[in-house]
Length: 335
Ligand code: ADE
Ligand code: ZN
Image 1 (cartoon, rainbow, N blue to C red):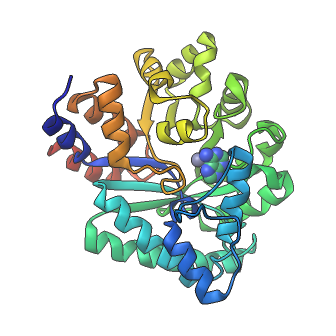
Image 2: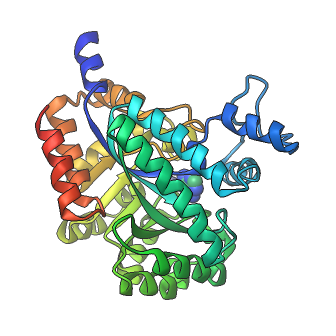
């Protein structure tokens, strides 16, 4: 059993976070402030205590989209970027990849998307100067908007692929359609040199993870935790060196697992799967990276060496260029 000092020290380790939704990281007070400025009615989005209110995953997605309505301009996204990077830096995150969706940033129009991206990058550059935190973007399509709308997101991704937009991914309702319905968009992104990830095995079972690997050719999987139910798939993930972007607090908050003790992250790690730790949508799920580390250390007895290994795994699976990766690994090495 770790004492309080040891647990505290673990929460202060430098961290690499690979799975965070840009809008999902918006503090409720930030969204309320914008709603007031713009006179947008957000009835039903907040609980009486001011936190986000939702009953289940599908309701969460609709509350998420309702809250996102107040983010209407590139400047709103710049302000959001500043707020979320300050919070991540306060949690000792040194490198972050966030999911940014053209559907919310310009409605899939490439010209408008470029303006949003420019504003986000300017805010990220300032945060790197002020706090040392490095941000890179993963363009994200939204599964329940369907394969045609996803193609518009993929076009935005292709047009802006480079050192900063480093990946293409998919979030949204995993119970809608199949991974392969989005193969055209993922192929476009791959051909533009982008790295690939998709949400799978959060709701769609082990089969969805297998489909993600076989039909979309992703290198990383968002969540992926339900792979634990298929031992042959676990072996495949190990053999292919697929990294899972595991978000334990999100899975417990959305009741994928009843509590952290029942969560498969430790079993996956013990099986040799590359696991990493992220927060997904931290204010929605009442979590932070420091909370995640605290809870994992307390529940599974993970010590600093386990977290160091997980952060090195995350840095090695990051979609950034090798020069940036080296800087991140050197920073991890110093602790
Ligand atoms: N978008 C934001 N959070 C998500 C999650 N946990 N799963 C799927 N899509 C999301
Ligand atoms: Zn997610």
